[in-house]
Image (cartoon, rainbow, N blue to C red):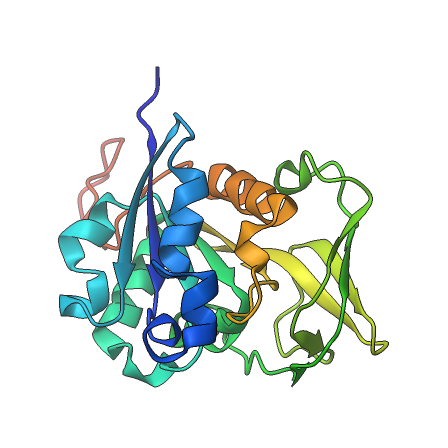
Length: 244
């Protein structure tokens, strides 16, 4: 049996401490709500981390052991240390998988890997979100039908300032009429990146079965196929070379 995928669920863990509304939905934090549905999977080993821990919860030894990092951020993007951002980026380029959730589209980590603004339109109102599965063949969409609905969610609208995805997985439609590229993948170096739009903190989105299925599938899809450390070694020749 292969070793379990080492997963870290990272969260700012700020809204849950300052908003009774959010704390009522996610009393142990969004990170623990996500970890709770991943931990029963026998092929996954799951830990959590958050912003106010030393090294923003991501010391070098932990990142070195991480196969897939899940990232949720919103109100404190600028408080993530540049050194941590650089370390996460390096690990993705080496082969670590990264799953970026909801408002983490504006995180320093995601923007550093995309190289674009990652900006969008938004509205927190009474919108219903319908996510259309436009890649039913893809490992991330297994167990998901043609579409599913979230009764209430924050609206994100186009244009979304991202580079053209390698694969577009989901497109969302909102009650107000907007559409959005809500599930997309990229290859960055040796690592896989998946952005998944749903997950506003004031709605119980991460308690919904379909959301849990997509994230679980994405963790398995994003697991490393290889790890190539960031180094420039001097390489001896494979065949004899003529004298200089």
